[in-house]
Image (cartoon, rainbow, N blue to C red):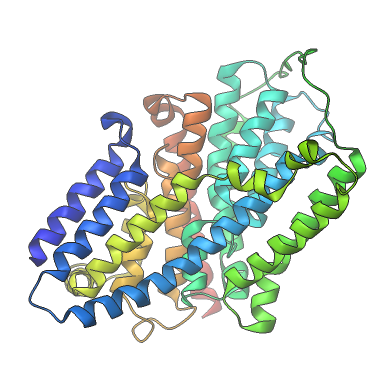
Length: 426
């Protein structure tokens, strides 16, 4: 029966990685894989009550991650509904490609730490459509956005789903991850950014504005209120956790409620039909629900492997055959370019407990960097890459030829800086 669980997990995992070839949404595959794994486990010679208790404990942890993501995505969608991100785009006037590249990459690095790498990529791809008309130029910029967003998300507790998982699980603290990973993450971006700067020249042609675009029903004042309120709320979530010691999702849900109230007050004089387009209900309808369900399914599947002891056995095997922590973590980072980093980090959390590696241990910190930035090596290796691929129809092999080598140089450079930094600080 235990072998059957492993086989189901592997088959499901392959189906997830081959989503674009088999034309089946990875959320459906992940949900089915998770449920089937637990269904098989419940029929093994084990205490049913014991199995259900374990499932309930795991679901409690998983729910915290999902509520956090739902809250964050809703806040971002509410800002976007008010064209809040125009606050940023309105101040970009340059058409010089090199200057524009540094501005966009810097924005991606900073915004992904505040929002998350997926949301930042979606926002900046939309922004680049307004700034660069030529698709070839735009794709190169988007490639750098993916690298920058993943690098920026790695050093923030809310910047990447995997870092958030480690933060919520107690493996890392917010202050520690920021101070220890900001320099390696910055190097991870700067190396490919500097190289790319010498590869481009000239000015970018901006697309012509659509004269038939419908007018907006929000004023600049309303846009600014929602944008800055949402930004401050997102920044205060780690502060809320530090002060109250409540789980991060509680701070995110409190922030969502506050922004909900603010948006209701801002639009209180509008007709109900107009008001609905700027409401939290509208934002909830726009969030990436399949991604939420994907995380749910894959985390349920991972929890089955953890409960049956398979992850612990695998950790023992890795430690006895590889042993070196740096090699183990670097391998996980590179593997995340092939398979999703969410289940890889979930598996690592299941393999290594807090008794083996306590909070803020070198292993967890390095894992946050590697899993967050290693996925940039392939366009399917991160949520940011997959989102950009879908939005701009970027070819897999184009990315391998033009962007992958830059991402790998940045990844190894940042990892080297992290190792040296740790050696010096120790």
